[in-house]
Length: 454
Image (cartoon, rainbow, N blue to C red; front, side, top):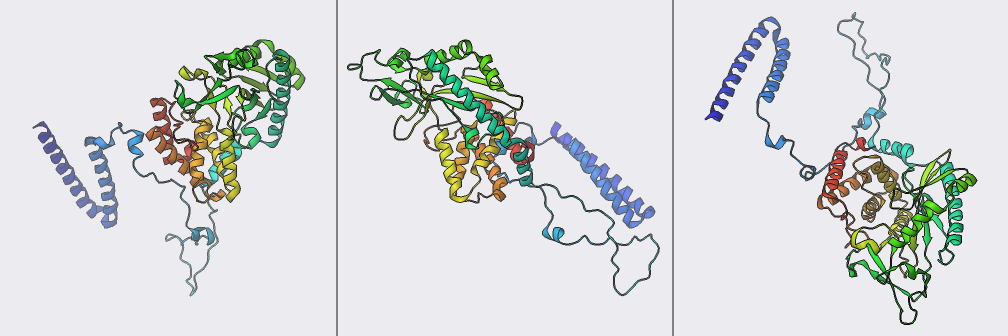
């Protein structure tokens, strides 16, 4: 009954407002004429519409409870900056019409061309142009800084290798090799680490790799390194036997040994003074990080103990600080195969897949809500897109960027991003639900106005 009374009251209010509008328009025609009354009528109807909108109850579909997942079910069309039609760019601006209030000029048989008095308006940048400007200003590293960083990383690698051989002469470490995105032309700004691989030289025949799915952890991203041939080569025959836990080579024990050595035994001030920079180990991180500060640049090195050349696939396993049951497993690093595949695809059609990956890394590193999307997630997105036979030239880079955002949103909706090389591996499996929601909302908003991400 109350709802019926409310509707009746609203109808009466609308009738009264309609009568007032009719009265105003009727008297306006007498005073202002037909043209003035038309203008007044349009303004009055606009005010009436605002009043109706303010007094009417809000629709449930417009409530604030809509999530980014529901909104993204609608087909998101890429928003581009409006561009003038081709004729507006290729033809001169038409002359201004003479003012009706000005003095009358003698009319000729041919129309007179008045001089152009208004300066041309500068054209708005398209999203493609803004994306290339973002790449130039925030992604590309000057060549001089790249060369300096490589030189410092190489010198630090030599000093650390000499230290390991003197400190642990019984442990056969291979040559420490700096590498990573900086050396592959895939470094997006200065936020990514320079990788320093410290390979372990394992005796052939004494170690066997076990897939992580066949272990207690059942993790397809990891591998276990099991000690074998104990009946012929008893425990203690290998210098790595001191790091065994339950018959498996434990990366956790190795990380703890090297962490203590880097933090307490290495004379970093002397090494930094010799190289002309400041080197400090980051003891707060579970990873083996070295912060390098030079008067011209700053970067971070990460020391990665690795097992390389394990089989014909040239699998690379890293000692990584994993949690739970996977703490004694070695993490499989897909960076080498990802980089090789992207390079092969770009070489095939002179494409821009690696540039797209750099742009995505630069955007996510700078956005507070997208920091959990690392290079591994973004590389898989680019690989999924890169296999398609579409235009990968520079002119289509903006379109491919928007397609990557759409693919990321779909993956976050399903909380699933299958690995390109092993579909059974879900790269989003370690993210929490609230992290996925935050990233999904940020990406959906960015898809509606992509310039806001740059």
